[in-house]
Amino acid sequence: MLSTAPSPSRLLPGFTLGRHRIDPPLVLAPMAGITDLPFRRVCRRFGIGLVVTEMIASRAIEQGRGRTERMAELDREERPISVQIAGSDPTYMQEAAQWAVARGADFVDINMGCPVKKICKQVAGSAMLRDERLVARVLEATVAAVAVPVTLKIRTGWDEASKNVGRIARIAEECGVQLLTVHGRTRSQMFNGHANWEDIGLAKQAVSIPVIGNGDIVDGDSARRMVAASGCDGVMVGRAVQGNPWVLGEVRAALLGEPAPARPSPAERWLVIREHMRHLAEHHGIRTASQLARKHIPWYTKGLPGSSEFRNAFQRLQEWQAQLDAAEAFFLGCDDRFADAA
Ligand SMILES: Cc1cc2nc3c(=O)[nH]c(=O)nc-3n(C[C@H](O)[C@H](O)[C@H](O)COP(=O)(O)O)c2cc1C
Image (cartoon, rainbow, N blue to C red; front, side):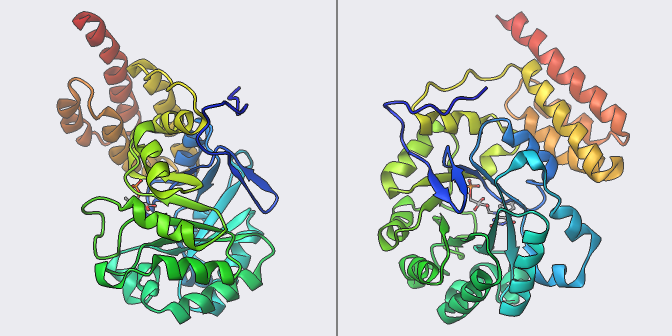
């Protein structure tokens, strides 16, 4: 059992959102194509406080696509969970929020941070930060449409010259948003450069709702430094979990003031990966699972001896069982190689 008993060196106390306690205040970032139900299940085992689905476009919901339904499939054990929606039409967003709640969302998260051109062209995602009145209309409408807490995820502005993170934070609070996540980059930065954690602090200073800091957390130390630089109430981890969900255990320990957990051996990693693969096959079917494995398994091998040769050979495998066998042989063989080197 993972304990959340308070430690004197605990960094952040956690907070309440609606009828849920977010404790530890550690959130798995929404990542399209990555944080599907199978991967969220894997991440949950590291004792995190909140997970968010991949972004679901409000128009896609309105068009009722099967894939959209699958994206909103939630697991009882992954609660509390936030379903993320995106769009700029208040009516569609109201319907999308109600649709999410009907599928079991504990919270509805609105994406105003996505930098992708296709989304920004429809004046959604981070493009909305340029139109503060539209931000207010969408937030007010969504908050009014559902009984669960509505949360918002933003970047710090469109570009360096038009940063408006503090103003957007205030608008969000005035509209009834109950939690704000700030990725410390502007839209024009895309994923380049460094996240500016002090800018996350501008949101924190502007509002009294909890603020989650996001951007460039890669271990316990970076989480501690972000908290110090921004004063945020919680942290969100994204890309660092790709192939390394164990990082969540490290960050959790840092937030709780506990010693970092031991790094998993390759054989221990394989147990988690095998579980991930089983969930992938159950949720998506073997064909799609096999495609997704081509992305996830190579990530899992990063930094291990012989990983680049393995990755080259792995990409040529077509069959699901062959993929599993090759991955198992690699990870279990890795332990032998470590023993040889010792
Ligand atoms: C492949 C990928 C997909 C993403 N999809 C989403 C998404 O659906 N919704 C969202 O709000 N942010 C999305 N993001 C942004 C992340 O949630 C996060 O804000 C960003 O990666 C910065 O955090 P990090 O430095 O910890 O990765 C995505 C990022 C990546 C790399």
